[in-house]
Amino acid sequence: MSNLVKFAGNDYLGLAGHPDVIAALADGARRYGISATSSRMAVGWTEAHANLETHLADFMGTDAALIIGATYIAGAVVYGVLADMLGRPVVYLDETAHTTHKLGTRAYGLEVRTFRHLDPDDLARQLERHEGPPPIIASDGVFSISGEVAPLDRLGELARRYGATLLVDEAHGVGTLGATGRGAWELMGLDPAGVIVIASMSKAFGCGGGFIAGPREVIDRCRRSPDANASSLPPPPICAAADKALEMIRTQPQHRRRMEANARVMRDVLAENGVGVVDDRHPIVAMLFADESEAAAMANRFREFGLWLPYFKYPSEPRHNMLRGAARAVYTPEDLEKFAQAVRTRPAGRK
Image 1 (cartoon, rainbow, N blue to C red):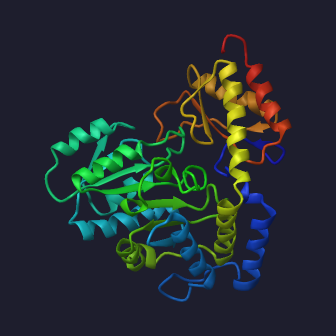
Image 2 (cartoon, rainbow, N blue to C red; image 1 turned 30 degrees about the horizontal axis):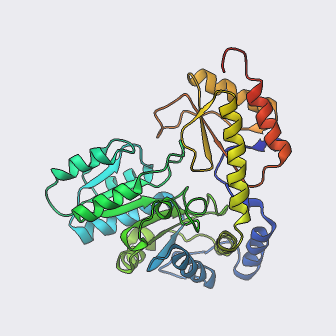
């Protein structure tokens, strides 16, 4: 696969292979070694971890931030804390939200009521009948397969009306959306004081691990929770690399501009050749075909042109006629021309 250009995945800004990020990783390894060697509660904590948490909170505009070894366990951390703080509230969850929500609510036995995908009106109807402690409203900011952006402005409005806590998984939004790259919640005009954010450093950051950002009381309780305290921290070199990536996201907007320009080129080519896309606000370019066999055939066609854009039946996405691509900042004009040629020369009868 090394000779294929990746036209999928999550390295939207191309920072995973950027020389400055790699240099920060190497410097971190020389200074701290390659492993945290322990958990936060023991001797795993380093200056690299402390610096990254401070800078993440500052970037997100929240009171505090907490880094964790994998975003996947963030749901368990947050839902465990909120269950204690809010009196085991009901969770209203978008029906196709990421598994981190489902794992977290299941781990603490919280009642989950799903609302229709991207449908705040359905959520409002359910909240009108809500009884008991103020609930949690939870959703992805950007849905990882389709690239759809949640109507967080409406969800935030409902959270304020019903006194709910709004919890957003911004794994694919941070670094890619919003005026400063904070995510879909920033794009939708939410106040950072009114949202708890789960996010990833393995997507736009090009590194690894995850973080939770929000009000100080929530983050402090997360920091003391067994799920966060007893799990391994991200390796210090990864923290150093993520800190450099965060600095570049803040100070070098040219990476986002190239990503956005490449996304426009890809979508224009698809539109000119009769291929629909799901959403046009995120670098995820989710292409829609007649059926799953056509989507799989298109993946093979891209491969013939040296592009790696594999077809999967994603468990969180019910539309199996979808082929998930991604616009990345590092594509060359030659790469984009190969993409265009593959689309233009699809088998006859599939346009």
